[in-house]
Image (cartoon, rainbow, N blue to C red; front, side, top):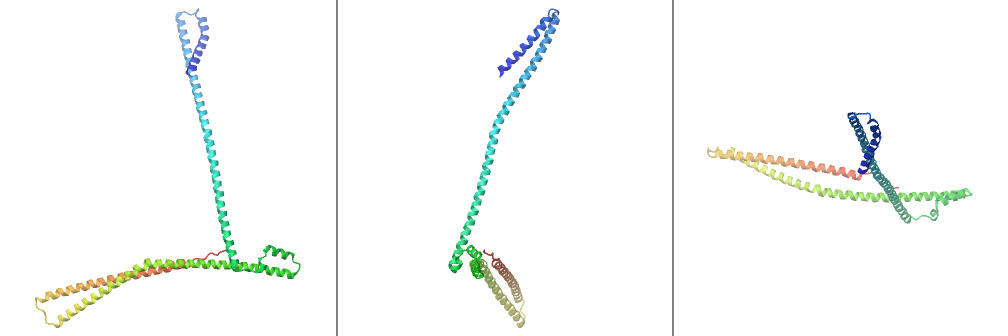
Length: 308
């Protein structure tokens, strides 16, 4: 590319020189030396200006060519990328469609299995409650017999058979519903019993132990209070009945009386605390009983869904 550039510059300079030479030769005889030098300098400036202009044009052409090559490369890269994105989008759409078909197939399979289960139950019920030979006929055949009947007696007979078939089908359906409801109720009762046993094991046993401990503490405090009151009453009685004590015995008796009073207050406080704890435990037991009753109602009061 550099050699092409130099070649173009040399051609441009040669072309300008070839055009300018006749002019110089034409005016050379009529001009003196100074004017000839000035004219040559001007021509040289013109040639330089033309050369610079051509040089800039060549540079612009080279830049345009480089840009075109870059755009071409970019376009060549963008086309495979767009094609790849399109392929990925198509693959994603195919995957989604395949997943939808798989889900639909799974749903149809589940429905078919449910239908087979229902048919098996109906067959079992029919084996438990066998029907008469007339009921083995298909309903379509019975309807065809009604249409082809020529007398009212025959129509009445076929209609009776159809009604009997409908009644037996309804009876089978009712029997199935009753059996399923019994199974559900037995399972519910079993769950309720298990729940009550677990609740009693978790809550009632610690509560009974706490109540027994509180009752024992209350009994001990009551006995202690009665003993202190008896001693205090005995001391007061002895103090009233006996002669007045001397100066040495009075402080000891007062100290003993004060100690007994303090013991009495302490025992009364313990008794009140035990009674409060017992009351709190009773309230807790009542709350638990109400909670058990509410839970029992919730478990036992659920609506049964009819089975078709």
